[in-house]
Image 1 (cartoon, rainbow, N blue to C red):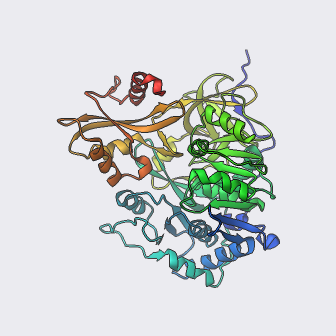
Image 2: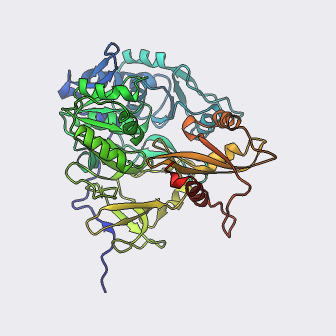
Image 3: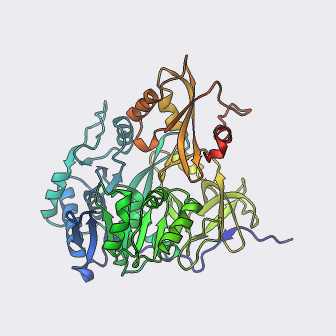
Length: 522
């Protein structure tokens, strides 16, 4: 008996990126034609600190800074560690590095010295670009100390002789981003120049993006969600990007959307929740919203739709492949689903041996290794890279089902990765940090629901002798972990649940806690 299987094959497949190719040149491909059109506006709530960059200004700055970076003695392929705050310095340094053939490594400004020192040792940067006040790596024995270029010095490079866009194979490394791995160690995900080419599949598969759009992204400059959805994609198509100035609060975003006639709004679910606590003005220019980073609660979606008259389209993705399943204005997601594979993607739902399962049956969501947006691999971790592939498929680690129309329903993760404000966090990394406290005998971390639409990271720990003050544990966490990785709840327990193979049962901890606290709906 023939059974329909859960594979979506692109028809037609997305074409390969041109060769030779440069990602930054592709992002700025419309600059010569658009000239004085606004590419970027940094908008402030009081309107007094608005800053505007035209396409001509942006393109000139990127190429000039690229020339200045090469003048530092760098060569194509060298890695540049970005330690920059929430400012336009971040996308400028990122694109200029790629234009010059360098490999930028953006990192969160919230990282502690311990965290960023480990990351720096892994990637071996030839240069660090750092804002004042952002933690820098500590010196390491037997490792050369890379020179540091300040944000002010970066600005000075804008007057340098421009560099030509470095051309080469679209499969060569373009940039590296860090993600938490299931081992508890942050993985350095290497992406090729072709990654930007793959984002074309999001234009209709998620955004409904047009060159006339004004897209306001509520995230900080130095978040990869902002960098892709809020900046590079609008620039690639010739639209205008709007980014709130640093310090903008959720209650001010509605007024910014209205004042600057934003047509698309992008944010993490938590931002939508915070905005809905306040009055919203009429948003007559807004066509729709976009959401990614974590699951959008249905209550938030419904309330936004009622109060603004616009819909929110959600996307699913990961650091290794950005987004590839989403809803869109032309193809909304059926209720309870993530949406559909974006046009041009090849997606499968697999059983443990790599065979596509029948429609409606649970399995692991996988992306074909030919996807142009898929990572090149984890830097310095060939075995970990190989473990993510099963034959021709890249395994996401998420359990889903697919209906016969291609709609994907999320059913859970096959590992214990937690989500904190759109960032994936490994429980092993947090547990290792908490276990360093002398008062903690053993720790296990899990993401738990505290309200119907709110989850937090919780640390369940066995005290060495007695229950520890929560503030003591919180201070300990903040000294070793970025703010978004720190537990917000500390629960002393007598034992931690384990399976027959002694594996921690973090899901059991979560289920027990939520059951004892009214299913997380207190």
